[in-house]
Image (cartoon, rainbow, N blue to C red; front, side, top):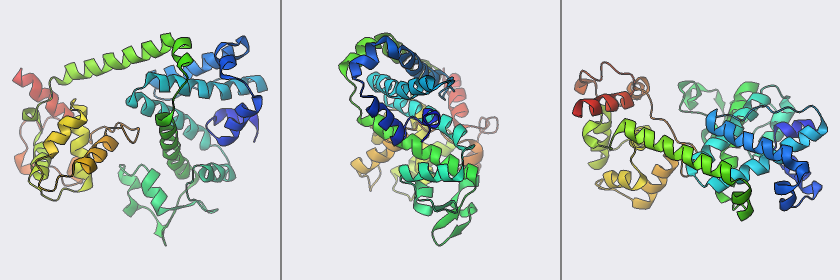
Length: 334
């Protein structure tokens, strides 16, 4: 594959093979002036992921530029792994996947199929995706992507070029997050990039503190009617659909509850299974999946039949998101 193409997709196995063929020791990558440009781009990849949510398009005017872009990717990964924060691992994986999606939309069909094969996503030559991989990687939280709205025939779904690129974005994100979670960067990384690692940790800590200050101390008393209904249903052993559990857990996570606190609320359920529930919570909150999901809006909650319209109060009628209800309720209580 062309080195300029690999510079756009440094996570592909061929790009990793380029790095291996260069036979460069880690010490050289971290200290040799030849790789200073790669280190700078690696720092920028990480900064862009944190601040912009997508890595930038870095100049590739020559083969040397392309090579430096390819080397910048493992450097950025080592920095992210050194930060050691699950949320940031997920954010970085998503930032790389978003940039790949922008490029994939302009690639040939054969190239998309090649990427799909490497990611072990089952796609045939007619861009038909197997439903199992569709459920695994498609953004099905969006109404348009619901399985019932897609053309399904004998277990395969027909996608257009852009739709397949979007599915591959999620597959890339998942692959990169899994790799980052298992990474054990050399200790020298923390020394060479101490300033960057410390700055990112401080930024993440400050964001968490601001979010907690904005939300106030997590309190069940401030929950909107829909969340109180879902929580009561779970605690009494009622059959709550997956989308209802997702809605409640993502909301409780957003108001600052940790896994143990959410587990404590679920523990009252007659059929409570601690380990199974823990896995579900950690998947929704990003500790397993790498994606820290935002709670759905009031419109989505109503569409899913989770809004107790007979229990709506004055605040409900003013807001379009349950988090807005929670904030208003918190100010009133103060």
